[in-house]
Length: 265
Image 1: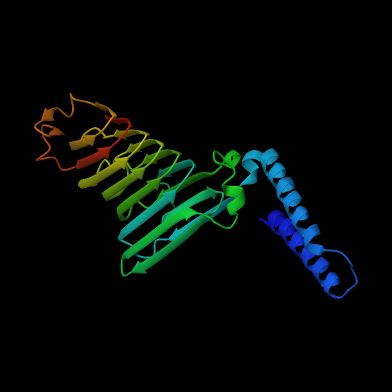
Image 2 (image 1 turned 120 degrees about the vertical axis):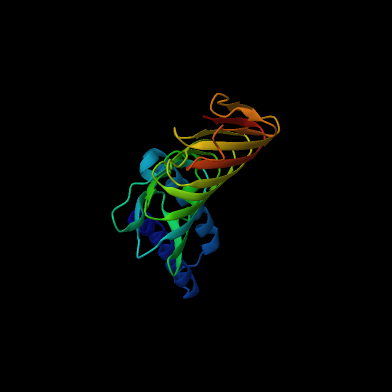
């Protein structure tokens, strides 16, 4: 962050000095004819430096949000290209904790024992973040508290996403994904979890823990569908566990899926 600030700050100060000297009559040149080529050259130099740095081009930001009596939470994750890993790894009194290469814009609002969180890529270094060589370098790895009943909403682009909800209490999970490679392990002991999936040209894998029943309804276009029919046999319009109605822990999956592949095991 400091290097970027020094680089662009120096450039803008230099341009300002040239304009001032020109206005004072000290320089007798067309300053704008000098500034624009200099700016383009500086952009090129910065682009080459970022390309040679690879993963180091994106600085990592640490984020920790306190639990502060939260019992229910809603977390929305908006993410484009890169890698995301979500787990239940937090400290005792932490609602969320993680590292975010490329930076993160986070907002949270608490109302009683309910906290709403939104995470999205930082726009502070927009030019660097849109460079193709930094896409794989943008890696987010964060955990959510096991002490909270969660509603989760993932808005994913061209990402490689690994989500382990095994130990979390998730009541509602909504996944909107584009050309992503996504693996989600569903909760093992959350009572009933509702899952809504909408996706395009994506590869999606849902893992249903042993001992968890499932009811699955799929509306697909050209997608390749792979369901474990031994665990979830076809019953009318659904794939459903034999013990779905009586199971203490169950997931209800509704998938509206276009091209790509969807596996549920």
